[in-house]
Image (cartoon, rainbow, N blue to C red; front, side, top):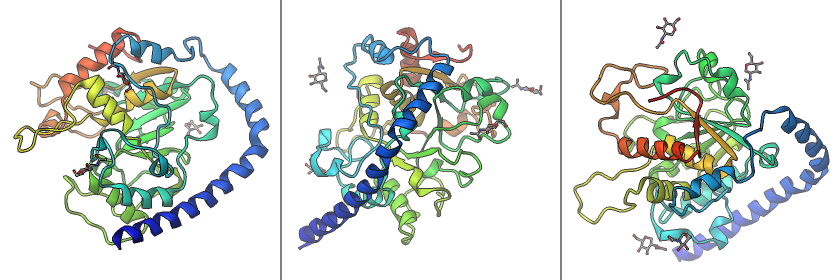
Length: 343
Ligand SMILES: *[C@@H]1O[C@H](CO)[C@@H](O)[C@H](O)[C@H]1NC(C)=O
Ligand SMILES: *[C@@H]1O[C@H](CO)[C@@H](O)[C@H](O)[C@H]1NC(C)=O
Ligand SMILES: *[C@@H]1O[C@H](CO)[C@@H](O)[C@H](O)[C@H]1NC(C)=O
Ligand SMILES: *[C@@H]1O[C@H](CO)[C@@H](O)[C@H](O)[C@H]1NC(C)=O
């Protein structure tokens, strides 16, 4: 019975989705050629000396980690109809157990793509901007604004820091606890807000906001926003592919702990995840604001904003040593470049 209800529900969502797809596809062809001419002039005006197709993918090969390149960054509704997720794992490395909630969210969002003007670029330059203290007084703002894609993390502010971090944001990765309530001020009208679901309630949280259902506040390690501020059409869900690849191939951390293990689970940070995502999608990946102060010193701020110190990272579910090592390797093989000197 439950099964049948589910099937019916899916069929209904599917129909809505097909209709929405038609709405998007039909007008698109009308704009096809004018868009193309506009983009060509933009490409030549950028400094793309470094831009060589598959440049980053080639460099990634040097790590001999057997990365699988995937340029579909976001989950799509149709993924659930004919595609299988590897491992059958639960979040954050798969969607096992979260399918019904995900379906509802994806049906509501109804958009799963990058903006057409970015998707069609033959060469994509990307800047991934970490929230590190090194951004302070860096004067990198103008440089950062010149990249095709500027990827930012969590609730990192822009206003008041434009000179150092720029004011362009193409993609912002976040999870419920790191979602900003001031997202309209701190982003551009066309910024894609990309949810990185780490746990089941992260998707339920979004569903409750979108459908205005009863909010469940239990299970988060920090109070989470209770309303969605901003354009719902800009929301995307990051494909679990990048979490799996980051964990298994880049950081080599276990996806699943043995049952009854006392070990804390370790997950990648949104920062390292953003770097791997960029390496999949972009032809040039430059980064800034990564790295933490020496852990021994608990007084140094870790972000270019606010006053958090390493103390705030003490109980985090991350392996910062492994991540620093991975970034160094990526830099050594030439897959990424820093926009500033760093240790
Ligand atoms: C590399 O990855 C592919 C696809 O995930 C897999 O089929 C293949 O066995 C892997 N090769 C090695 C050497 O691990
Ligand atoms: C999903 O998880 C359940 C419970 O852990 C498990 O029994 C099932 O085999 C998993 N599904 C897949 C496709 O692996
Ligand atoms: C940044 O610049 C301001 C103004 O010049 C200065 O007061 C401050 O100490 C600088 N901070 C850092 C971390 O360099
Ligand atoms: C960034 O700031 C510049 C200068 O103030 C402004 O012209 C531009 O429109 C801003 N860009 C965005 C995306 O907000």
